[in-house]
Amino acid sequence: MKLEATVHPISISQNDANFNPDIHIGVEVLSSQLFRKKMIGLPVTAYHHDTMKAIQLLTMRKVPLTASNMAKVLQELHNNLPTPQELARQVLKKEGRTMSAKNIWKTMPLVTEQAGGPGVLGRVTKYWRDGQKWMVAIELNNISNFQKKLIKKGGALGEISLTHAVIGNVIEPLEISFTIQGLRTGSTINRIVSASAKSYKQQKMSDCTVIEEEVLSKDVTTAIDEESQDPAHSFYQNLPNDNDRGKFMEIIRSVKSASSAGAEANSKRLRELEDSMSLVQESVVQALNEMNDGCFGKIAQNSPEQWKSNPSSLATANQFILAAAANNYNKRKRDTEELDKALEDISTTPRVVAASSRQKTRDTQAEDEFFKELRNMRAHLRTL
Image (cartoon, rainbow, N blue to C red; front, top):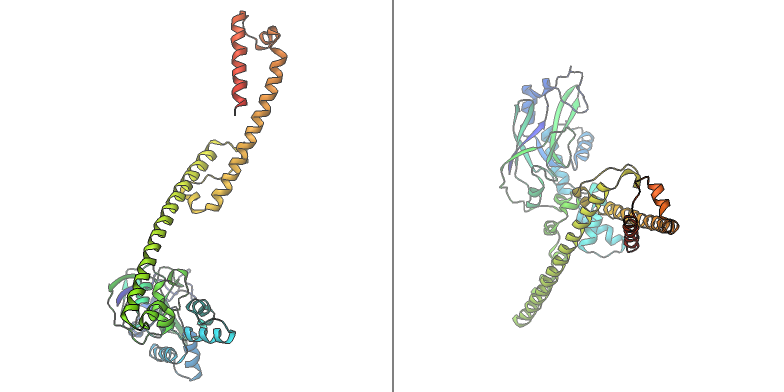
């Protein structure tokens, strides 16, 4: 697999006021022939696993911190340290828990730091400047299919991080690592040049130790032993004859058919629920837009899309709206009752209405029409 990536997104001088030695490498260093020579052949790893262990080991052995020595020690740790799966099994065995694939994956994040990393995935083959950016070409020859899905632009391992040491005021690049989020914003994979890669038959479980919800998919089961991965297949292989295997396949087909029917029913029900939720969203938005500030006070207006992303808030808003509607109904009911009482006082004395309305004198027929309309209003309000 070949790709190109930004290893340092800006060119900034060491004398610049915005230069941060904790983040930046000065353009004077980046552009030097010595640094360029050191970058070629730099080992490439994943999520800086074993980096600090390798540095400590080199320091203990009093071996110079260089890229070539770093690559040797990283591969040594990869080959000698136990895998996260092995450590997880040890923990489960010690605690007396079931040795299932589910328990193994739950335990692995607790032991990942003590386990061996994926080693050296590849090397830097080219280093150059592109405008303000500093680029590298990387060739990965020890990468699994699982890792290929993560090492891509925008992927779980889509950013680049350069590890370097400062020895006697000299910057020594040690490794380039694929990470979830790099220190230098903008240091990312730019493009995949070639997606083909040499198969890595000696893959360790530590190659799959990016503990993210989105990567704990069916692909990771390829790294688990066959027995725990596919017990149905193992059972099928152990059946004594073809007749039993045929019956087993008939049962599997019937279960699959029933599962498909159930999935279709669940899918239909889900569509109905989604349609109902959409109706509630639109109703909430419309109701809030029509309500004035006197109902709840000043509140921020959300779009239907925003309500869709937060069903809990949508339900709460709908609850408040229904409560406001009930309160408004009770208020209108009280007002109607007060109007009924007032009409009882004035319906027998037309001159009071005429005086309070400050209108021109009406004939008796006009006054009867007025009270008829009031009675109709009262009857209508009572039906609400």
